[in-house]
Picture 1: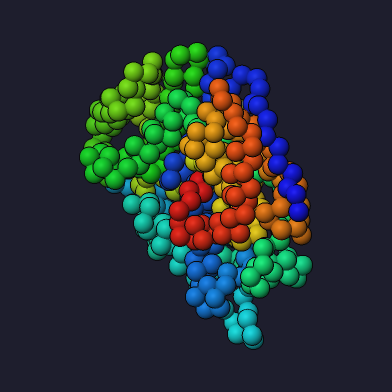
Picture 2 (picture 1 turned 45 degrees about the vertical axis):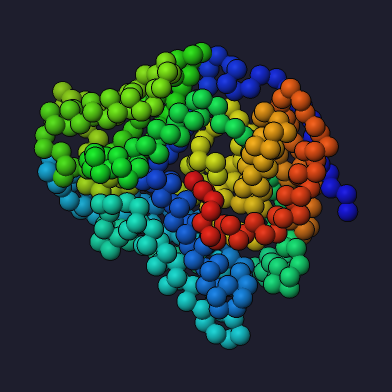
Length: 394
């Protein structure tokens, strides 16, 4: 079957060519990002269980999740959690096979707690947060679509949906991404242990000038008083200006809601605003490339927690990013945008349309079409990289 692949020139001004641009990244400890990552780990854990027990990944989607913030009393040198956070993952999964009940809920809870323990340093996964799952059996129709995969055939799309991606990042995008990654790196945490995991970075570029507004939770037990807090914020600002600027016309502001006169500062017990200041939800944070980029192609699908076999909301967004990157890194274009749409019930590698838009001095449309065909042929194997944890989902 001939695929509907279109390759055309990318027209108009790119985001980085405009006078202004906005980019955002929600760090690993942000309530929305917590929800995304936990949902994804539940999907991966279920996929591995099904694979180990039955030799095949079975139908599941655990892509709905809600974090209800707790109540905390942070204080210099260490406060306390008054009421725990509640985190619930909701979805569908095969819970019974051959009259045998499967431990789906137990696997999900274990995966949730494991991620929290490994990634939010000062959050006690046993006492600071209540983890729940509401997983029910899937609809017969979607389960039947999925079962094609178990027979060794190309999976059928579980939805009519879209994916979008682009490559490469521009200067502002790289700066925002690098800033959060630096502040949440192991090396930075060892040197500045008072930095929490809940870090949100918004970058605004006005012509050549970049302004970063960083919301950064601090961990109260490392803060001795207001003067100490002010000094520590100053040191982080110096770190960013040293490590991130690198020739950029860069301005950095941290915790702009602070009021030193009122001694109202961003102090937490656990390093995340989930303890009191904010709630979270799957799909409200970063796209699969790790950023929120309103000036670029961007799907609103929540990729986290969707099964990696047939759920287009995950597969097509990962594929769009992979294809745009492959086109640029093989020298076929300087920049690529990819849009792809599925049709429910049709093979996942037979999209309704694959629209590729490229920019560069020398564009070889036929070579781009060939690489797109090759990657579509390989799409049914994309799930293997997902459950190996090779993809960033948030």
